Image 1 (cartoon, rainbow over the protein chains, first blue to last red):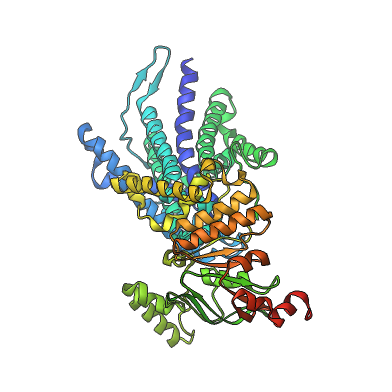
Image 2: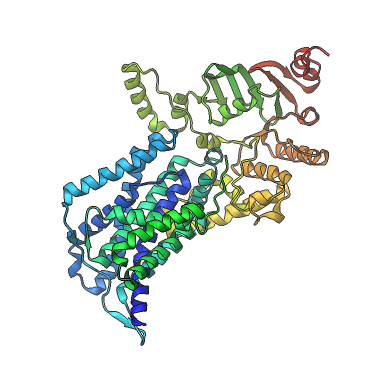
Length: 303
Length: 288
């Protein structure tokens, strides 16, 4: 039982990170039908920005009383900076190709991914870099098992961000404009929506969520490296497809499910550790073959 | 009563096809102005140019006396701060031999100026509720920014409430208040057309452009549509419509312009246009 609960909490925590990245894929796909392959590296950069800020302010040594507002600020500032990075990427790599054939921005996305990874490699080198965990350590006992406090905080932060995003999209002026732009770009423009702005905001939000995922990843795994975004990005992409790409709730759900699948296959089978990626990408293939719209996808082909 | 919309020698060329050729139009404030013509005459192209989706190949479009094209005037009239940027970019381009800066007023800005439109093929946001569709129309009249929404500032909250109320009023006006929570795509066809009109009205236009509003309507629906259009006009909105149904056009419009092969072939009050030999020829092939 203890082992099962451990696996469950591992899966959900890892899934939270995948879900946060997957949201960025799905938001961007939803609005401009582009698979933003650079998103995984945006996630890595988010983790590095967080690390730099922690080092800059020496946050490892802060007292717990100071740490709570400090962490909120850390998340806010990192998310904002990474969001601006996402907007900048959109501006230079995707907007000039807005009316080009679909394949063109896809290629620049791959190129942008290599570029970001290269820059990270040059700046931070090829090694694993230690990351402090500023979330409370220790665990809560449930009697039959115990759950790490870090895991609980991670899930709480993730759920808050997801609910916030959902409310933002469903309830606010800009969220409504995002949905309108996703459904019919020209009609949205003619309703007075500045679609370039809305698309930029979408990139901002996606990258900000990836930054939150990056910090959480760092806290949980206590080390990061320059090529982190490659694997995590692809797995998160699988999660987004699994949940139904373009669908925000689906991406969250997909992230958690993929995290659980990885955790259970690695913990309960002797070969799982080596084969985790094979399992994940087999799922991607199966989903694409048998249910291309994903779990919750309901995008209908129009046009 | 001034001129709301004026086009001066507007042309649009798509490759080798001259879709619109030197068309001059004047839409006067408070009137119902119709544009008719056989299929492919360039009517929707005119609409798209006025709405800012296409850039005219040549000619000028003026809205309430101010030029929408070329953009130069736009910068001067609406964003004096950016005029400097435009002037510098323009000079650099000319200096390098690229010609004048080819900026166009983007469609959302045209809507903000006060021109709203509906579409020939219904283009509602099908996976949004009827109410939300109308609220999207109000987007350009709202001010809440991303941070307002995130922080739930009182401004954003009260604005959201106000906009929702206005959207409900508009739905009541077009007679769709019962369906406000339905997905737009689940509405019957006639209701979808009315919803498009409500959505366009939500942006608070001075000029409402309707692209074939009566297409696919039965006689009863046409009568209701005519009433609706007249009600809108009585609220001070100028109407500019494209319509194929002659009965509707003749009944509601004060003035009609006829396009054929991209050229204006007639203009005037309904009786005059109806009896114009060139119009009859364009529609029937030879003088009847």
